[in-house]
Amino acid sequence: MAHNGHQRLRRVAIAVLLLAPAAGLLWVPWYAGAEPRLAGTPFFYWYQLAWVPGCGLCLLAAYALTDRHRPDGHRSDGRRSDRHR
Image (tube, rainbow, N blue to C red):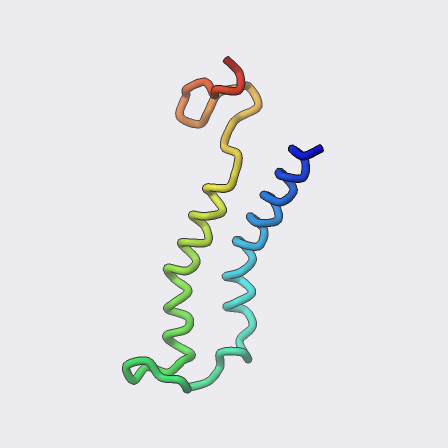
């Protein structure tokens, strides 16, 4: 039972990490303004640009949380996983 709870929490975390950039960028009225400016650049532009590395970090974290083991006991790099030895 504890294993299922852990898996469910992991899936929810992955979903949040994958949906956060979409939610942050698709809700345009929240960031559709010129203030505050950063080095003279309106908020609308630098907010979107800040999401470029933010999206990469979210994807990296979501990938790190995924279970990359195939059902046949082999990992994606060709080695056998420790679970099936």
